[in-house]
Image (cartoon, rainbow, N blue to C red):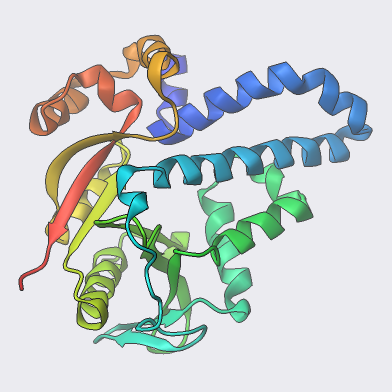
Length: 274
């Protein structure tokens, strides 16, 4: 029971990351301690491994048949620091170098492996990842120019476009998430004509599921995160004890077996009116 309670403190995707990280650490432990002297340098070694795993996850999430769509022309989108859209309470601006500190604070708060943030190479990779081709991120500010978080599209070449959002801890739970995503979709539809979007969330992330429903998201099946094939099946079998009544109800809605929710993300699709 204690183990189950502790594991419920991190979301299902993080469970997979943590499990995979431990497996890789076990395989590389001798190498890591041979290459790094002392706890601080060893932590940097772990941070580098964690960074590689995070980037691998992003690539897996983007690796889909839709990725073969023609390359998106970003010309209609705002450049760094330029306004995308302004609402009654918020405005979205193109990500810029001046936003670095705010983004890193958001990422640090959300991470379960905070020691990685002591590694400069990890921070550099993390920040550079926001500027990769086909990614579009926008900084969320209130009308007093206070940075609240960010939102955006994970891969402009994979349609329907997948939404991304992350807020500073103190601004979560105040309706900023749904308002930001609605503004984002409205602006992108106006500038590009795209009106179908997708959101992928952990099956046990009730706040994100609620947000998807608030912006009009409808259940649209499940998708793999970064484990596949036999490795995914073995993981789901190993974590089967985490299935509860709430996951069983969600499984009915998404028309899948409850155990599958342990290793997959929920897919919500949002279709804006023409």
